[in-house]
Image 1 (cartoon, helix red, strand yellow):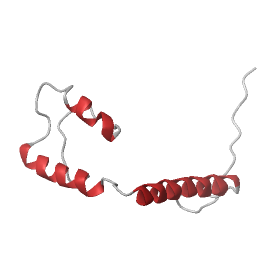
Image 2: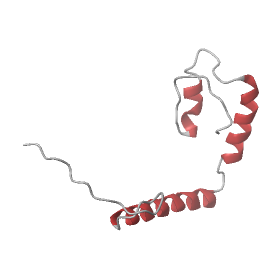
Image 3: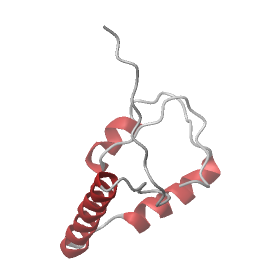
Length: 93
């Protein structure tokens, strides 16, 4: 997706079931013609059609989220592995 250039201030993140509705909201063409083929190929390549693959994908995401929470509880940064420091702000009365 990083190689596709979209010339719009309105960028949507949506479920595939609502994609056409989002597309039809536009009155002007905002995706360059040469990027349409790339976008189509990318969408078709990333569609998960197998139930098992979708379930495994969801399981992996949930596992990763749990691991990040455990790292944070152990005061370890989930991105770099460095130590997290507890900051104390000034309390206002």
